Length: 379
Image (cartoon, rainbow, N blue to C red):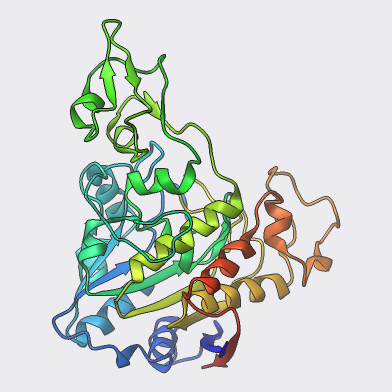
């Protein structure tokens, strides 16, 4: 397979050459201007960060990319989908407020923010993909599905379930509706937590398959002969009465993320940017962030999200670790006082030993999303 080009710039600056200018130069060198943006609805997919987490991408970087897109005539909007877990981003009202608090607002970034799957996470399009082994028709947030062009801006970091979070994770999981996230995470149909169920009947009224009824005891019951596992009940329940039953393995989760990414990018021009900064051990979905595992390393861009993720992972794994970096158990690393010998080791596997981050890249290459072979071009 032909090598993909991944463009890289370090974080060294000088008078007249700020980090923001370096980012602009990077994406232009990587060829973003080859895309015709004139009059095109352009979704800029990123993670707005759970309030309390300080590792998310600063809005200044995002504004730099948005300004460039706008100058090329794009109809730009920032977007993310609601979360499956209950927090401050599980509905559009709270999600928008969280985005604004973290600086993603029209004043700061020069474009509007649209929550891709709507108020309660139920607005999505099922996008069929050929030869899918796990998710034949991924449930993608409607705003992303309707967009003409997809641009991802990714905070590269560790992830407690996928191993790491990069372009594939940001696109595949981040663009999934709440029902889609259920499909990604769960290996079985949802179940009812009878202790939490209050008998409000919101699940019964909104089940498109007539699979849920609320009995005389005011507890919901799922008829699994009718249930298709769409996750609508999980998305709508405000009391955690409808919940996931069983979680998928890391490998299968990464396979599904790859298929969801393929659906997101299907038939659309796309371009991807990753910032390898504040490489926290876990996702920006947490309301806190741990000490970074490596120093800030730079910024990368590519038309190939697979090559981009591979290049970022390789760079992190070849970098020296920060003194006192934190493992999954939240205890200081016990292998060495300074962890300097962690250079060239698989840091993601050390942090989250039950994950297999390479599984997603292997499968993504297999289904034609891109190549793990890349040429690193320094800008």
